Length: 247
Image: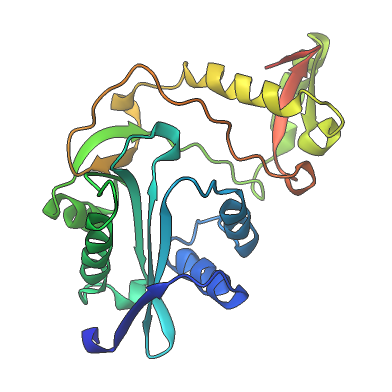
């Protein structure tokens, strides 16, 4: 198997996007990443930040993907976020280790070279945690994942709450309904920044954030707006509005 592996750059072709989306879906059946979302993220990416996407082929089949990118949200020279996915049918064969070593060699040749690596995984992915800790990663934080199964959700359960909000002047609207509001994105960003302050502390979050060396804490992070998807594509996103205030 290892002798037949080919690690190559992602070609940004329809075929590579379809193969990567299928790989991510196989690795995590709950994944919501689609070809369209992958393309959107790549189109949004700011090229001034270093980034490389890789695929691993075996006998013409995509069996793994990897990536490293400068940490946009918390930039520091030499800090990289790394990602690695191996198809479930091809795990425990050394493919992940070979891809990780390849990325480390690539990062060592960068200027500045990679010196601090960050990644995430679910805490129930014990094999992944072993893989990371074996390579010097250590847990530095936890995140809480909150999801809603829209197919199983019963909206009737919230009839009373919806009426209470209506009486307070709070309206539930979709993103497309706010397309003509020139302050839509700015208010959404401000709301996200403020509401994140009330999120549970790191000790109570569920997802592992790992790094290969202790992270230096800084009180100042570079200001950067979040990726904004066209309003017409956000069909399941909602915001609560009371007058001109987003709640």
